[in-house]
Image (cartoon, rainbow, N blue to C red; front, side):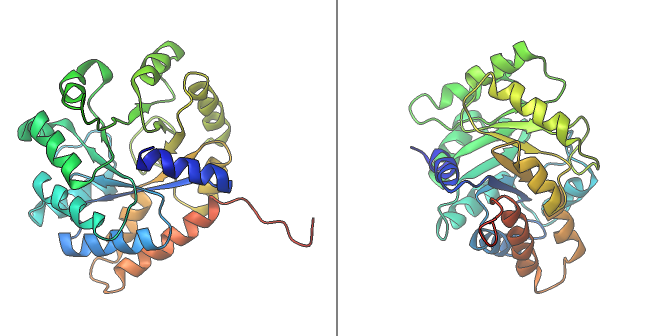
Length: 272
């Protein structure tokens, strides 16, 4: 089994759900970003989505847009993200999903990107603007050494398309909690639970839900229906609020601890 499969198997045995954390690589700079990730891993993050900073995102809300702008201003490139991935591997075996738009990958070249990502220790790839119909170039690079592509499913995705997406998916399926962009407010837990069931009818892969999840209460509510919870804007908002604070990595670790506790089953007290 690969790292992603092992993680979900371990969590299932423990009765826990996955806490998937997104941060933009190099926000506010590469050394600080690396310390943030190390602190998050130490406090129990289950999977890491490492965002490649991009100037023209389409799915990201203002908080993550600003995080990309800070990283780009600090000179972070796709090559720098690969180097950061290698550095993370020096202290953690956490599954790493590289989160990118396709333009940086296209500029590097699909084959070169695939080789460098695998050599750096990445476990999967999520490309927001690359639908399955346009993925052959990347998929063909990984015939001998696959880099799973995490697929997105939206609330508006019809059942027949969910089945088509699921047939080519690996790692886990990322269910967008609602229409809109990352960080937007408002969750309808009943609708999320119904969409999780639709996705599970088409695939045995774990289903992780993201977009708009802010509080530990949100995490607990979504974790009751899904196999994992993805948090991005809430982490990046905390970074933005404490950019010059020397305790910034510790603050992110505290957030991870609170969110992770919400993915665990509630312990019964007094035998009740």
